[in-house]
Length: 159
Image 1 (tube, rainbow, N blue to C red):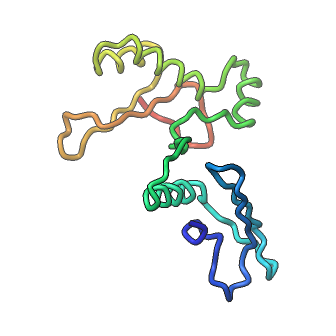
Image 2: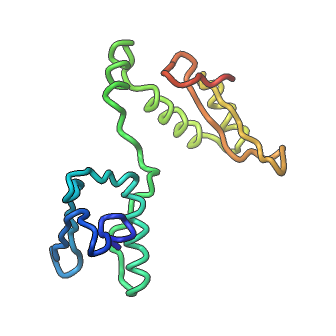
């Protein structure tokens, strides 16, 4: 598992130092330094998804039961401090991302069909861009939403 993540290396490599502690009967904790013995930093980029995959592989290999499901990165992300600060400066009660999330949830809860969902969003003043299937242009495979007055350093969504 530690090799898959990028923490453990060959015995001849003076790489990262790590320990595994058995915390209880049902799990362990892994602690690793990111500074190698030769003084260089080993930035384990994108290590969380690799850790999740490695633990699933271990669980499958040894027929272990996972009590806590891994995060799948679909949970609500907290607003960045810059977003919160900008919302305050512009007199908004919440960040545009949170406002969009609320409007989309409201529209989906009230809509009886896909068309009604997109109509409700547009009536609420939300810009909606539909993504159509490349194999069947009549099929909608995704969408993007934005608030007309909310701008960031990224390009603006057009209706």
